Length: 269
Length: 279
Image (cartoon, rainbow over all chains, first blue to last red; front, side):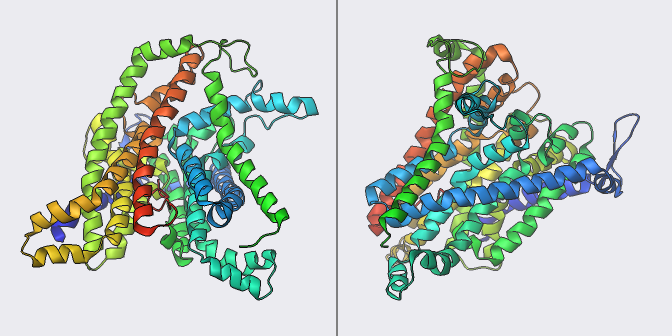
């Protein structure tokens, strides 16, 4: 047994958790202003700078806000299709829908962002479609990031909810109906409480993946910064500060994962 | 569940909206591959297919493609070994901290890519003093690919009864024979599915790759990303984008088929994407 585990554990604990520890340590380092050399000492200056600078705080809260908005959007978009797949579709249609959701999940992330960049651009298909009714698309910016991130991570929300709904026995729904509950009430009192852990499981991905993304903002939101952009652009010239800022998503995700585990989401991963 | 016609139709509309949302962007990018002009104006002014031959003959794109394949294969190999070992330990043995292993395997993918990327690149350059290159990318990719192999294999091990292995041992087979003749045949498709998904995951990755790749090197996603900022390369980029979407569909489709057939035969139920829910 020890032989089985030693390899994977060495890799994940020493290399991966070790790396996270290095990241944490590096966040206490500083950079010599003149030479640009790393000073491997210990100070809270990076954290103080992040906290005291308005821009960094705004960026952090903006990123967490977008990640929350994306999570809610995806939950709303995912539930109807997941429910249809789990409870109403014939086995054939169900099979087709599962494949239809799975395929784009794995097809190039970057290509999907790029597709949206073309669609949202000034002469893109969105403005072209909205023009006849006198409207304009959102263009590039925070709204574009919200739309594109919701698009990218939607399948990660659909699949756990679908699997969660599949686990609810049909007899439970019939029982609720027999006892006189209308569909809306059955949904609120039976389906939603049982499916909620699955929604939380899906939200881990929609939230986390949005939190650290810098490719999407760099392509559809050139002027509005997110945590990912700041970490990416600063890591070459100020590694300690970048490392300190990267601890924000780590702390947020650790708290998120602990809450998710409480809510029973890990059974649905 | 009995729903009134109105509710059913409402749900169908919801399904339609979600599917359109998922597929319209992919269709748009497919159309752009035939763009006769060099701008991204919609609708297209003219249509052509000559960017396809240009793309196939673009040496940078081809190099990037080969690099991606190499990295994907190496990372998949490592993930297969580590993921399988961990899943065996967790499903066939009871030990202190068993739950923690499942958690540990998931973290590299549950934490944002930028965290994983920065942490590993810090460690490679500051602690080990390694120069960033293909080797460091492979190590980084393998780290977050372990989880897909682990999930696929452990799902299978849960379903294959331990009695078979015990029976084999009772009949006098030693550990290796049992593994070779009983366990391995039972897990074959799960291993293949896990490997295909791990490869697809590595092939597609860009964020961790950016942090761990050496200067001047390009995987295919990085090549595409760099080209998005070079205007005159856009038509070729459009074509590569479409080809790449088509290529990445193959392993995922195969993996799905493999796990689905097994799901149908063992349960008689509908396919559940249990092992593919986590990327």
